[in-house]
Image 1 (cartoon, rainbow, N blue to C red):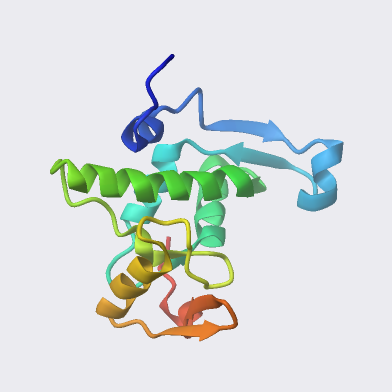
Image 2: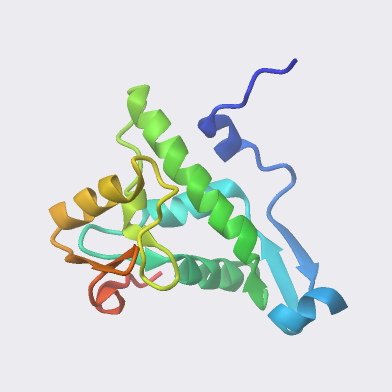
Length: 156
């Protein structure tokens, strides 16, 4: 039985990515026409790493940046979201191993401005880091959001 890959191994395992593909007939109902990129995990990590303190980014902004970089219509929403999750966990693993300080993954929000419960430490840790940096986190129903997050979006 093969050993389970670490988050860092997942981050650096590009498996032939990035890959640009044509949006086929089945996908066009959701995504329209044109092309899409399946990014490499490290590309998502580098964008998340570039977000300065006081600024935020959503998965949609990351997707737009990747699409622009690769000259495609869109970036795959599923893999971009998965690779943000991998990046956050790899960052905590890298930090725990003393390799470097990791990346500010908590500055990456879901597309609607809500916090990501799948990040290390869940909502509470992301909320703590964001409030430490001066953002106001509010609860609406069961979700937590950064108040006025659009005013704080980074320019990618």
